[in-house]
Length: 255
Image 1: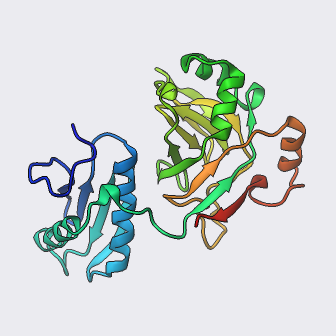
Image 2: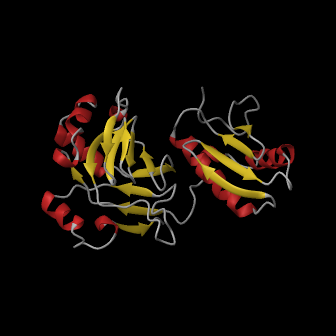
């Protein structure tokens, strides 16, 4: 399957449209995660946000698709589908620029030990030492591919091929909030304590979901994140609130 088809290819499988219930259309750019497909989804949703079509009430992205929710008293599937098709044909979304106003975050992270009890196991599956695993992950600059599963929870990627490791066959009973976990070339930064099949490799003090804030989701799809390693002493000071808000994280605009 071609995850990055040419816009001019009349026989392409993607992008494709599917009606979802009475008030939704899903625009899918690939059934498999790839950088171009995720780029297409982010760019297409950003463009939809500038169109201000009457009757369109919400747009959201997944890893490789865009969901468009509309008011069926103002629009039909056929009318909206025609408009979406025209917009799809207007540009090669797989090669589009990413949305503006993105940010690069650096989130201090404590790896391994009690902070990441499954780091050794995950590193072995990736066929590298623990120190190599920490070095590679902590130096990687990863995109927020999507927000989902729990409020404000980012899926980040993609890591190098060695990190195409499976989820666990069973579930860990609980993973703490602010934990970093890995599987299938992605990281998840958990916003709440929850069971999971992803391997817990590190811990942060970063709250991705802040219901008391005017912007409850700290991260946005298209943002980029790095997880630099810090010592246990520094991490303890972060948890004690001695290094500012956001779990010691800082950010800058991506030019």
